[in-house]
Length: 278
Picture 1 (cartoon, rainbow, N blue to C red):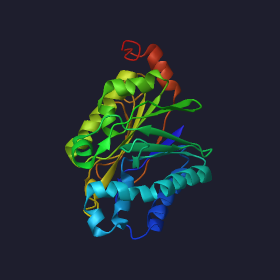
Picture 2: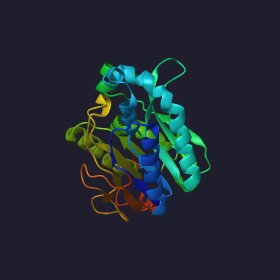
Picture 3: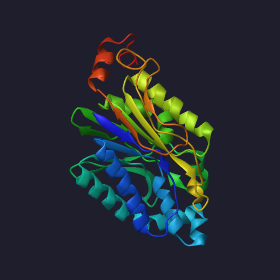
């Protein structure tokens, strides 16, 4: 199975159509290279804040309300691209005004048949809690894509073993980690977590980040990271568990082929049995 992840270089826009074209081209590139799944990073959509008036653009809390204008078009675009290219698009995340009046950091997953599924972030960073007013969500969603069982742990969630283990216990053999980190320290925290989750649950983990600077959108003004795919450092996998990764802070598209039968094999007869011995 071929999967893809995009280290997303953030940029300013003057019209919605610029964002639409940028995202459409990324999905087309992944599809042209045979990917059946594409992972986009957390909060990459916040480059849409560059469309707002300066007073809103500079106020991270005001941005939240303004972003709701584009939420429905964003989900519609994800759905149309998934249908057009017949692949699953894990749409990073978007700050969504929920039914209870609170904002949630929500990942929309658009399936190849046009179905939309969702996973909310469940542990909020200090910025989200203290500066932005984004609240934690609840619930763990595992999406059945045939032999691929997909779980999503948004950025900071990946740093909590029990949250990811809940997804794995529900059947996930691939954990997608869409991320947005404003320092190299933050990138390494998520990377260490992603590799640890692959080791302890003996599964695949696909990670990607926003990259680049965008001072016009203070929620994502500075971004560091890369795209990578990890597995357990055990039989059938690379010795360090790194199947593929891009260079730090370099745009591009990670394409990697994964064999899901290796997860079953290593859980059954690995050099160690972390999944069983949890």
